[in-house]
Length: 403
View 1: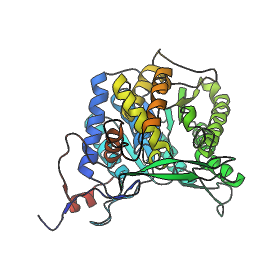
View 2 (view 1 turned 90 degrees about the vertical axis):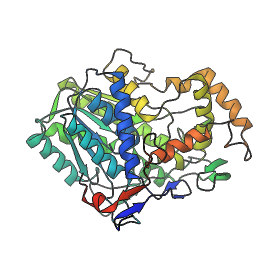
View 3 (view 1 turned 90 degrees about the horizontal axis):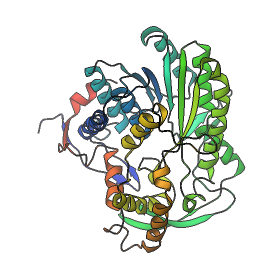
């Protein structure tokens, strides 16, 4: 092995990945592109901006937009480059690069902006790029941001921090420690009023509104422009720590923002959409209290019923069938509901029964979907990816990659 070759190993700290396999990230991009291409082309956007497009739902949205709709895309994300053999950067850093490379091979623009999507300077850079190098207008904005904090745009000395907590009561339940491969009891304490408001500022729709306001003021929104933000409701069994918790409060705030945005873009025949997504394995979902227990039960039932979807499967169906197709499923509040498969009564009844049977001794057995849940988590960082069996990388080459 040469001096610049580094051996890659999986490293977990609780439910947080501390290592990345760049080759696996590249292969995962190829696998997702292949999935979309296998479904064929469909009519949609031509110029898209994806805020938070480096992983999970945002990345899946970007891939189906580019390789399903044939769109040029801009991605904005906060990622870290490699520094040395002990800090190879973030998975999203490589996802951005390998997506751009494949987009360019297909004759598409895949521009990446790395930095804080909340910052005014980032908004200014993106708008200028659209004017100068992106045809002057966009017809799709996907807002898919999960962030721990945001600086108040009107007061640089104030920073809001999001929290994952309940509201009004504490809740105790079991969660999964992926590092130690065991269950542990967890109590989620209620958030203060200030924490609820801070989470709404960070994870709600305020910044989404600002992006649309500034894009429109700059004259870079095309007639028929669409914008979409992803929400989650889930079953009643998760309401305490999600839908009725701080995250749910933020999603409600985002929904209110969608109505404001709709009013602002109606003169260009625009459309502001909220899409209620299904439960998936993401870097955020694995640290949501108690939520992984629901996932391993859900995945098992979905495997049996043929309804399980990864992010690329879910978002490709959303855009192909609902955003740009003629098979929209909406609820009484006008939200798109691609989560209907997860919410089927028969599936939820079976999930509830299975959750009652899960114990510390059997949670990681064939009784549940634990293996799939863990595998999907590792794939987020380039491990256990079908088609990628390389466990060494050339650090020198990685350091030369540019987004």
